[in-house]
Length: 452
Image 1 (cartoon, one colour):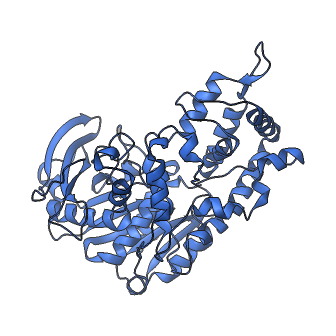
Image 2 (image 1 turned 180 degrees about the vertical axis):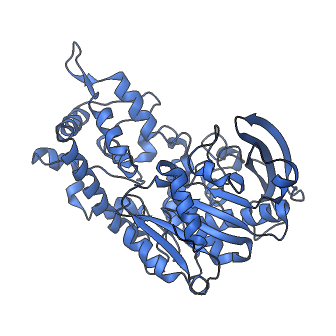
């Protein structure tokens, strides 16, 4: 079992690692408490990358305000930039940008099937991961801010789950914030909107998205039915060791949350079968591409912690998406095939069967079960403090977002004093990437109450 480190938290160590065209990059490492309620206890290491426009050097660079980017997820490392692009291009006009690998991700102290056994058994692993929610990430950010810039506030840009973290930040440490910019990440904050309510709102959106896809690409409905028949009769193992079952196939609907996702799904499906001596079989190219979409090797914390991001009432999440799915029988793929109906695909959901099908999750089966059974999850948002908010907040809300319910986001916006919103159907959930510079510029103008 890994021995706890109780060293004094280290200050930032910065080393310029590379100069890219138009960019100057530097590495930072920070030691922070695993449990911020026990700051003298075990430490974990966080990694962050500073990105600055190459022409901003010396005193000009030192005068730049900071913007910290909180990545979507949970369990995803920050962007790895290659030159100026999209939202980063706009941010670098006036900020020093910090790309934080949130705890357990990227180059921060890793948490996956290879490293978690160092903690001990499943119970110890689950206890360790209970400290990986948005409240801990916010406290990490506050320690980093004070070590980098002292008492000066900074701007936070939160994408998806990063937006959830930004609202937790606004709830617990608004003094650290100059402005908050949120892209597709205004979660339900009403204590009465529990995790089950989140998924009851999600399944109808999933149905709308897949039926719209079939309307655009009618032949895909027949291909998916053929795939369900094939997987019912044949065991298929993907190139990464993941078992492709019918429910796993249905998770390809995850693609439909992005602007180009419907087209990507179509091109994936049209190569599903190849002729062989034994009849039609899944093509190797299809199998490899599906493995890339479904794999959890790089993001195991997504599956382990997703439902806990909605848990605030002390109750266990208890595989909410799986339980609620039973209330929507239209998602029964076998019955859809029998009745010659379109097979509905799912989206941003995790299920207990994934602990058997997904190669990267099998060793963490009991850990995941313990997290699903865990009680005592505390509140992540302070609704009374948000109602008195004085920090400029701007949020883009994507109409009929697959991953974050629009009605929940609008209700949250009404509950936060002074928030400015931009509701659009021009983009899907990945608007901050697809719309890049234009989306961030609009958010900055909203936060500053500027026209245009």
